[in-house]
Image 1 (cartoon, rainbow, N blue to C red):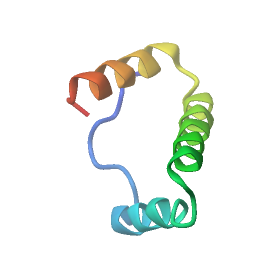
Image 2 (image 1 turned 30 degrees about the vertical axis):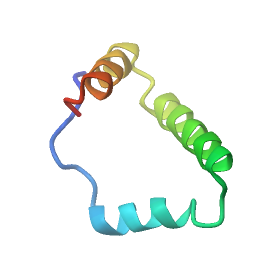
Image 3 (image 1 turned 30 degrees about the horizontal axis):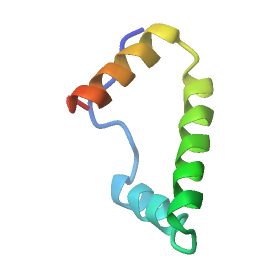
Image 4 (image 1 turned 60 degrees about the vertical axis):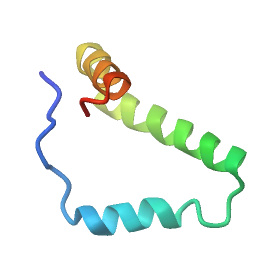
Length: 64
């Protein structure tokens, strides 16, 4: 499996609004911790170590 970088989220604007809204009442540390937990939950869902390595590389280089 390769990392899918094509648009793949139904209602991306709604998702973005939900993501931003989920942090509305959090301070910076709480928001960072929530983002870290979300990343780990989604990484666990993906599960494929090669896909995760590719995602890390893309995110770090700004190719995401």
